[in-house]
Image 1: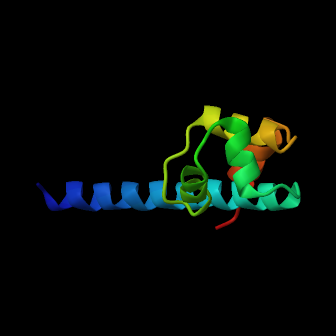
Image 2: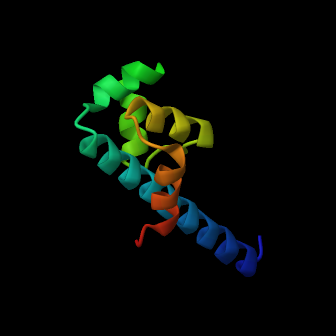
Length: 90
């Protein structure tokens, strides 16, 4: 593998890690702001508490559909949640 390709892949990994951390931070903050417990949200969307915890910690890739389900479970507008993710300053 060439040096440039290794550098490119490393940069991509860093961007994806930052994205996961941002999504997790926004979801975690939104859940806390909703006054619901993480376990309640996980149960409401049929997800294990461990999986939701991994999302909130930024350790798990999150699909758009999961973000929508989480938003609905906390009575938040999914578009507002996504705007928060896209505008988050890390």
